[in-house]
Image 1 (cartoon, rainbow, N blue to C red):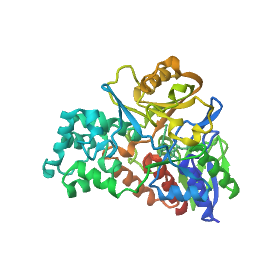
Image 2 (tube, helix red, strand yellow):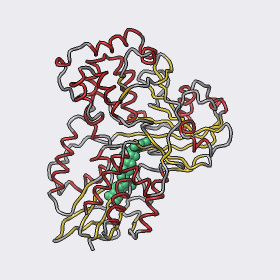
Image 3 (spheres, rainbow, N blue to C red):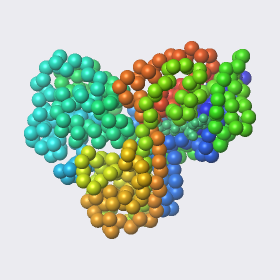
Image 4 (cartoon, rainbow, N blue to C red):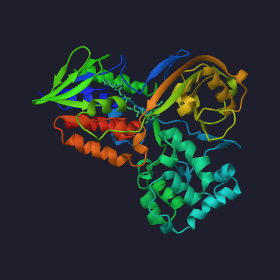
Length: 445
Ligand SMILES: Cc1cc2nc3c(=O)[nH]c(=O)nc-3n(C[C@H](O)[C@H](O)[C@H](O)COP(=O)(O)OP(=O)(O)OC[C@H]3O[C@@H](n4cnc5c(N)ncnc54)[C@H](O)[C@@H]3O)c2cc1C
């Protein structure tokens, strides 16, 4: 029987371990901390178990949906209330027909409301600009500014891209974030038509799903399956070095070495790259750093929020005075299962702080931001519980030039017998991609 060591018990490692054991391997999973799940995490706040990391998944991921079915988990849709955008000019419903915030119909009422008539007209000029003067632009920020103007970039695209992909549009690779957009632009002749084309070819319905009980129930279910199928799970056991031996691998840990025929390296990015560096000399140098994000979860008693004044939440454009949060999710308005678990008048809010704003953020500041973004006064929200969770997010794959670097890493790893890598740092940060990558790595053994 082939023996496999999986390094890392995040989403990628858990799925890799499951797929490997189902393929007939004898599997040991090493997790550095005392908790499985990595960035899929939960905490009890104000008496409710709440996601403090990932909370939704893109519905397009076939592997993820098949996995949920196999685990007996029922994906749920968010409420249809939609999100809002806070600009320095006020709060507005987030324009509906877009991709990455790029409007498909720049003259639509919801776009004009946010941008004003003049900037909307500038964005519409995209439809008459010759496509050849642009060429194949890889920089998302430049593409949007040239075709539709700075207002679309700053007000609509930047808040969406920063919040969803944890990168700035000016450093983002168009193809990594919107596969097919450039091709559609060339075919259709304008960015807005390209957006409409891509939206038309996307599956109908909401773009994301959640799980009743939160995304962390995925980790519970995977953990149960690993137990059922006899995977040996070693918590608080970090891999500290990885070396090839004749016919297999030796993984050093503080409690002694683990020896196996094959290794799946699914640890989080920086740690995985440290373990890989001696095997791939030169390939991993000067890797861009992961992004820091702090999530503040607030459980509040606030009947004034019963009407969900900002739908499922608010994305924040640059330059909004007095607000440091990049986004607010009104989690109990977004997820009906969560609202059903709360007493009347109680709400769950989740605020994300990125980069410098992630440092030193606490519940008090988050409460002030939440009140401002929801159009209420802080005293109207009584905090029942709070959690402050710092994260690093492996969003580098979205950066210009990184897709080809990652392909080089994958190609070099493929040359090394018995080694697989998986996880957000190579697959991209979305859970759908991470689960698919873990599954692929597990099956490959
Ligand atoms: C705040 C936040 C919100 C997010 N929201 C969403 C969302 O709503 N939807 C979505 O699709 N995606 C979301 N993501 C992204 C998604 O959650 C992650 O990309 C994904 O969970 C990463 O999984 P992973 O297994 O690659 O890495 P990780 O989750 O980082 O797991 C890696 C695991 O490996 C362990 N490890 C590291 N080094 C070692 C070692 N040397 N030995 C042993 N173990 C080791 C770590 O302790 C960790 O448990 C979010 C991410 C964050 C941070």
